Length: 172
Image (cartoon, rainbow, N blue to C red):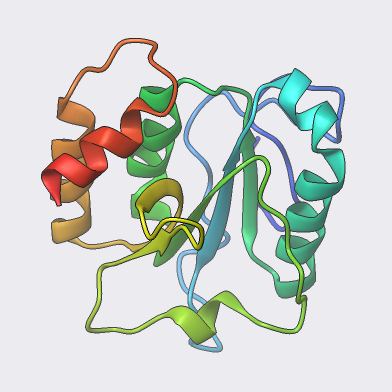
């Protein structure tokens, strides 16, 4: 099982889930229209997904509307959620990572509008305090990006909530 066109979730949640036990499958070796291969990765355990169902549904529907791959990782483990991005990067040109409480508010805007071929990583900055945060990022499939994620994941933080934010700020 994998990303073949229909949105799916990673794991066994009852919320429109498909069990994806291995790597995500690419939507095709090449896109005949020259279209970028984009996937959206959302992380939230089943309880969090139920609490923010409108949010995760909005992202899943957005991905389906624009032909993006979609996966929900049923985990809030700070290390695992970014590992999934790294492990599946080879199948896509760009991956958009979002926390499970992220919501699409404008379905007309496409991920491609935020893609810049000279940039490998686009990070989120919190409006309330200016902090760069790990709650969302757009990352290009590149050697630099794989090295960056590898460095980020190289730091072990245990089970401390939001520990990936601190590590991100440290390595920046």
